[in-house]
Image (cartoon, rainbow, N blue to C red):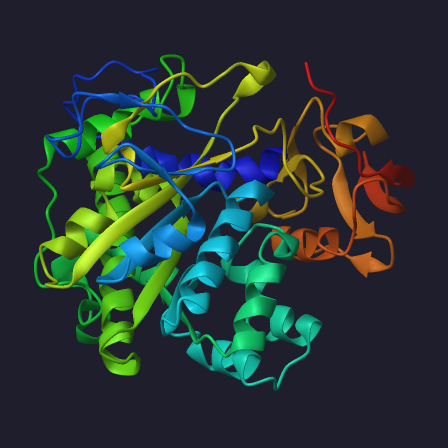
Length: 410
């Protein structure tokens, strides 16, 4: 699953800032940061249970909806390739809708300038495949559509409006390299009036996402790290602000907007929640699913009560929930964008015999000319499906028998 990992690694680079003193390798679920009233205690997570971390009570999804009665913005964190996290998101949307709330949905994967296809989807004007292609799902998002299919179908069935809340990539690049003042007026309109880059606890959290032997980030200069941190804060600030603006523009007085977003933007209420709270008067809450078992089925142990306002226990999982090929491609790094530059040792590609230096040509009947093409084509398969993978190796054509298989748990 290497190519699916590269983008999160670059994003995660934003969690590191120059001058950080926090030790790498800290337990991300148990840092003494965030809300002071909860940062000094741990809390248990119950499988298939919702815990209110402010009181320590174990509650039902229906009670969760009641406790969110005055909440205007709810951030739900996710691990993008863990189906159980998306099950929690869907269950929360159902609970809120069943409670009679007007529910809007904010989406990390789409920038704010991609609203038309989302409206067409909710209005029933697009087929599923038509929406995936027209909206640029695999252009803007690298993760299998199947992880989100049930959420999108539920939103359409119930008429829940969906809004892209992210910043266009080009604008994020400008903010990262040149600062917020370099953005044009339209992009700046989608940022809150105040953006805070100085919070020490947020920076500690960023640093905790890296291991001590992280070669990618250890070689970066202070200036490079600062620019990446600025990009991360741009995402945090933009997504919360755009969601709140969509709520104010399109929602009624009792509406709630639920933002589906990576857990790193939500953890300890230090990312999107904090940036929005400085610019918005409505009540903001956070919910993050937590796997009760981590790698090798080891219990996660205690979770810091300040990690989120609500925790929802889910099973642990080894590896991606839906098929991935397990390669990284050269992309813009060279003249052959589909040249393999990394192979996941346990992935489907490695099992099929793919090697570094091979050039992908076609998956089944679908030509592969880019990483986006590969992601789109892979989305049509399930675990256990077999397909021919045409490649060039040392200039010679070759077709391999590929079967999408999960990595064997260690």
